[in-house]
Amino acid sequence: MKMKAIKSWFSRLVEKEVEEYDVIPYSEQVTSIAIVVVFPLIVLYFVAHQMWSTGFFTATFGTLEMLLLYGSLIAWIVTGALEGFGRKNLSRDFDAFGGLIFVTIGIAWLYVVFPFEFAHFADVLPDFLRFLVQWISSDIARVLMVLAIIVNLVAAVYSAISRVFVRKARKKQKL
Image (cartoon, rainbow, N blue to C red; front, side):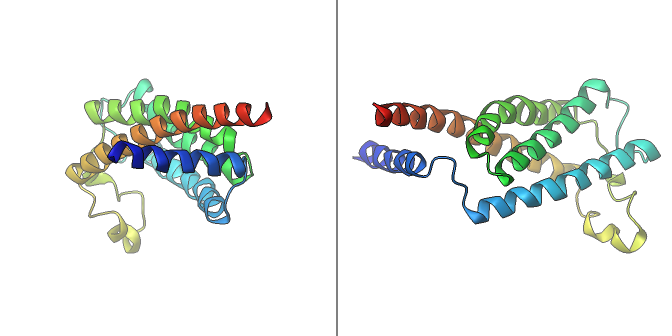
């Protein structure tokens, strides 16, 4: 009985995706545009830490870790840009593969190596703004990284599976 309910839910979702193929709801467009605006600021925040040698990045932060950190942030920006500018299906494809490779694997590797010292995370901010991020400890960052790994893994698998079913349904519809 439970399997039938899940199948029905997923079937309804696929049908809706087929009907609204490449239509992006306004709320998702706004979220995507916000990602395109906010994530470059996050990139700049990390670049500032690197340029000013604040101590946030430890000696284990090498070229691979740099590529994975910035690659995962850029993957979010690309996905947000694609979706924000009306390329829903291309965005979903990038979510499935780019999200899995760059974000999930990247964050997992950064979690294992953990080349960060969050005691210095607020160091690049002016004194009156430091309270905004000073509460983030290395332990809290690790928990957030595990959550990000889980969410991105689930989202990548979900995107891939739904894209396959939507494509099959669209092919059937065209026949």
